[in-house]
Image (cartoon, rainbow, N blue to C red):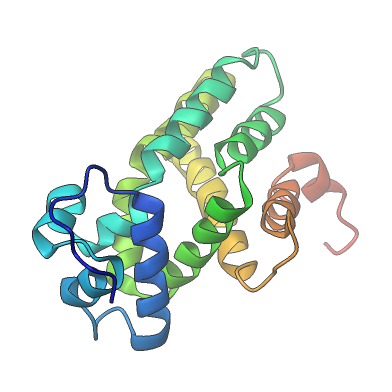
Length: 198
């Protein structure tokens, strides 16, 4: 166990997430708590709770940054651009840009996919992310019902997170990004309409 040397000057969320994922993967999410994370990180339980509030928040810490990257990417794409192309570029840019954080995102998605409580937390955390898609879809398809805009947003979120979860065991650099890219390509209306499998 790392020694505690008083209150740390900073808490690196990625380090906490990496330690927590190692524990939850081997011991189970519901079988472990703040004490185990505290022991693994050398941070006090009080410090952990002050920064993350809930254990689910440890897994969701990267969502606001992902949403900000998504927002910036969409803002740089003209509204006249085809919807799927704009969303594909935006989603890909919302992903972490370095291998470590990409691997953590994939491992987190796999855990979230297997724990209903975490799936519900992810649904709440990704509301602003999905709203970016709803807004873009509404501008591109103003005559479509709101339910359609919501369905598009849900489809892109599901495809992204499921592809990440399925790619968790891939170790080659870029494998997780490639898995998401492939999944998103199947949401292209042109590809769907021309598929020979239908």
